[in-house]
Image (cartoon, rainbow, N blue to C red; front, side, top):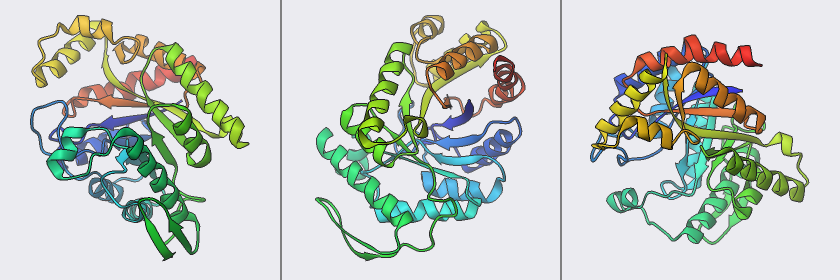
Length: 318
């Protein structure tokens, strides 16, 4: 099971924070540092947000081992030719350590604030699907034309090609329904989904397996990852205290113990042993990678706990 850290970068994470977090993440054995791609805060009323891909380019230059990527870049933010070139640039700077997360976009407030068109759900998915095709073709083909509902390309030659072959891992994030599953089966390296009870995750994996079978693809070649909030402690009381700090940051007076209990099937929260047991359950469900959503980016102690205690516990359970 691969374990990565995921940071909500739109919640006031400064460049100094990113540098510190990257250096800490390289030490304990986590395989990657990923970030959300948003320009408007979600947890707090207002917060600063550095651009996701510009941040990754900077981190690529100062790290050596960890993988870097977005979870996920909305199709509504950028032209696919721009996204493809940004990703290849980070791929070259990092020496082949970038994963490219793509999704259809969902945060209406953010779109309104920045002037991004917020289409209806069907239109956003169609735009997303067209972007995925263009991005992959830009990485893999020498020259091509494209005529679609949203984009028209003529004699596209996107050089340089990626360092990683055949292209950087493409992680598609979204609701696992038939049309999304079919798109993933055709193009994705991995599908990322939000934390959920085991029965829901089994259903999502089955939907992806069906789509792969329909596409003539071995389901084992399509990765299946979960992104979920992580509140880890030496014991349960420590985890509850971390939940309390998160609730305070967003002005929520919910009882943290009640919140932890209500989300226990969706979050990775509790003592080291409790979280390790839950991750083992995810592995048995066919999950190939877990993204620990770290909602308090200044809490370096929890990252150290992941490296010092959680990852060794996972190794012992294999």
